[in-house]
Length: 454
Image 1 (cartoon, rainbow, N blue to C red):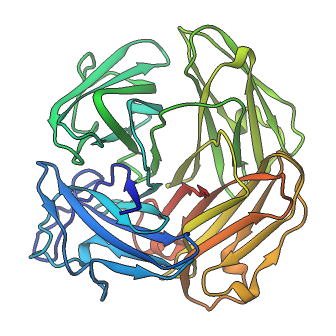
Image 2 (spheres, rainbow, N blue to C red):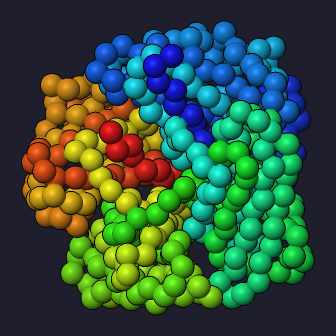
């Protein structure tokens, strides 16, 4: 096929209706997954979905649930959500899987993972087409104010992969996880609430970063969660950094939302990182060294003005950086990665307007080139596309999908955002929330993910 899109480390732990679900189940014990594929090719896309079990066994169910066959076709701009628990168990047994999506045209995908029990957990992340033998995870936690990482690594190579995860704690100390022989295209998951890394004890407290290495190309994702509340921050590992970096959505007491900006250097040597904010608040400074390669800026402690804004991070000496924005509002939580670059157009696979209670906020930042207005177009409603006000470089805008009057009262689909000025580059993030779900069951009913740079 012309184009293959890998969903990076999509963990699918399926619980069928006939299985008794433990009332104490948490993320990593009893989870369900979904993924949404969007066609961004300009023509029709024919798509095939293959599941890989942890032992490498492959499954290609003919029925993907909800009347969707496998393969299936998508019109340009359209998206399709697959809820994995709706696939007949006779075609896909309960278990954990990674997924490979193949298409004869350009597609993008976003994955979602949820856990239910005494608390609800919810996270989402975007797919990847490539891996590397070294992957960086900018934020990890073990017993840090009740937060634990849940790390999944997928082998994108052609031979079995031996994988090592090395934790570097901000207060000093290291720990490791290892797994040998992960089959090609399969994945392996460590839920740290149940697993003690080598070098740690059950009493170890670690807030830091991690490096994942293998002799094969790999991809990684971290479903970092707080079991007592259900709060979940899900994000992908990165194979490289950037300088500068851009964060389209940072908050300080914005309708209860507060962000923690984590910055990690990948280059050897000392560097000074300057963080500039689009709302004009004074810059923040992080001095990073090999002994202390990361810093965290909890916005209520560092930002003097309440609100929502964009951030731009630059480092001296050409140092390469990674950055993560984790945002919380009580038990609601989500995370997005800072962008190293932008494009003239971004694709958003999964946005909603009151779709089974879900609604979306789209956050876009101009990250280079020139000031620009943004052209916003929803799948199936191109005739109602519109332009935003002009944004200068570094500035950010938030679009609330529930406020789009031309969309039907319950809508779910793809969105395209384009910079109207030819030289302008943009990056966007998406937040999906379900307030009614939070009323029905305590826990996290918010997911956040990065839009695709086309």
